[in-house]
Image 1 (cartoon, rainbow, N blue to C red):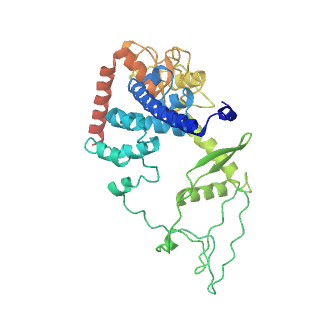
Image 2 (cartoon, one colour; image 1 turned 90 degrees about the vertical axis):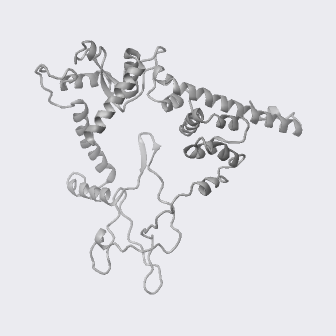
Image 3 (cartoon, one colour; image 1 turned 45 degrees about the vertical axis):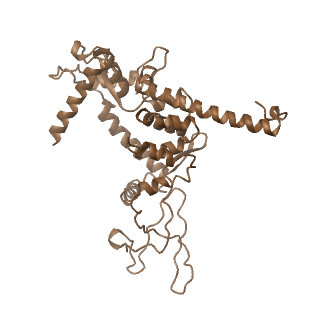
Length: 368
């Protein structure tokens, strides 16, 4: 709708229609949450080819990630406390407020908390801090960007490192050596301490170029330094992006070998019989992984293939209990959600739930 198409409305009419639309939106949001909660309870996202409700909301319903998170969180807590839906429908509570309340709601306090949160903005939700106080944040000690000399002047900062390199080690002026954990002086911060750095981000800058921002601890910093030293001949500049690329290659090779027997020199011999009928030979894993493209193979009735590439498991198309063998033709990749979903359709939900409970109990006894 073009903005100028409303120009004919009087001020009073515009106010009334806007208020009516807000009320309709609140009612619609409450209905959406109720439907989302029931959809989640029936696990229909699995039937429709998605590994999680979050993936369904983002990729099928086209929610933003933040929108999906809030609605799922509130929908799930609303199954336990339907009063939330009533408060949202009447405009007494917004989604952000419901998300803040969710961890604290109990049968004995839900009415009281909803009443206290009525018509409160997010900034006004101080009732959580009053009713559920958290411990003080610890005092932090951090390196300041500039230091004062004995004369009170700002000391010059060290030269900036080359692009892509780590900053030089700080030098202890008293000993002339690099500082380490044993030389750090833990002092009380002189005043308010700024919030920590932003969480890790991966943002596109240009085609096939990304900016990665992350905070690392001393141990990771030291490992990165060692990698720069060890790769000195191959990467003389110590460029962090190149070092990370080499490190990722090495880690990927190790993980792919462990998870799906990836190797440049596969054995040509036939798989030997194994005492465990659930054992899957390395040759089979390699071929199945390559055939399925490292992705869940579940396809819904509407043709939607599950996009999951993590939490993948090797699944028997014909179950082991029914004589299915560990062959390339009988093994497929399934995400954990669709592995469980298929088993529940075959053996029944109650049977699989009791089996998973027995497995968890045996694991607890074994680790006790």
